[in-house]
Length: 131
Ligand SMILES: [Zn+2]
Image (cartoon, protein in one colour):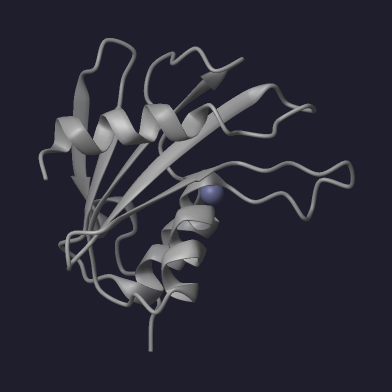
């Protein structure tokens, strides 16, 4: 699957975001090693702490379906669902990626005009902790 197609799926997934508090809608599309794709959106909560990011929604959906090997993820976001610049994964999501992915796992950051900035997990989370 191309990075452009994965980016499109992330943009579609953003529409499902539940973000009544921050207004920031985020979408993610996670490509498994077997070629299947799981999408996710952010889901906020009035007490804030239970809020979950789009990336973790996608990962947890996939892991709960038995997936363990992943190739890439595309992420986009912006206020009221309008993509504005890049929306890199937060630290918690980077650590979740670390649990299941190697250094070469690819993260595509999707910009407003469909431009894509590509990074590896090693670049986003250097000297990371994993067992
Ligand atoms: Zn996050």
